Image (cartoon, rainbow, N blue to C red; front, side, top):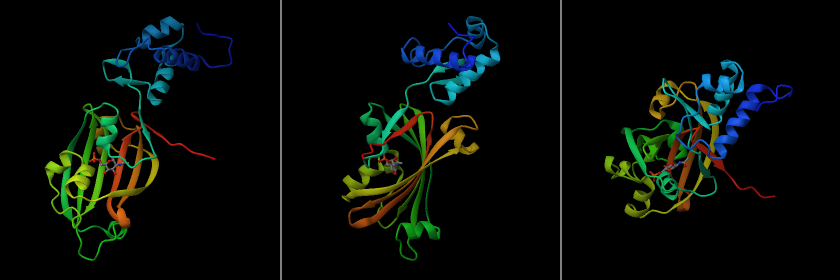
Length: 240
Ligand code: 16G
């Protein structure tokens, strides 16, 4: 199966072989792939070589490891278009997944200057600071830290945050969400966030900061979202 004369390293050939079998659905989602020992016997290579191939596939998000249990085929990443201003709830429902949240913290506070300026607050205006873990089909996808001006959403409470914030703003508060500005960057996860996201340290994460506006350019939220890089990929259509 492998070409030992090829200039392509053995671990890359094994990687390609496994990738093909995964893409051809030979191993279904959630199924265990053969153990390192079995693979090293199958390909007549060292376990170190096999481990390198598996690590690369884990880093690419095609496989995941569970301590003491083995290595499994990962579900495909959630493909998130960067074209529309949608909510987490809408995004997950559109994919046939069930969204849910855990509220980690919720407080009313005086914001630091940078936040107050971006939200165009007046002196003395308070914000709600909300931290939520967002799940799809009970699997953690992202952590969201959201600042909301109290004067725009005075009746914010735990029940609202158990559901969709955007639906509360549009249906209950009858305000119109208009547009947002987003910035995305890659990082390595911090220990505290790794626990919430149920991933190892270090793992790659994607951080998105969004500032969203109502009509008339009134800012209503600043959100810092931390996404699992193995569960998400972002898609944008670009034209020349
Ligand atoms: C998305 C938004 C976030 C918004 C949330 C509302 C990004 C990067 N962030 O996660 O800004 O607050 O949706 O979701 O997409 P909800 O209506 O389900 O609470």
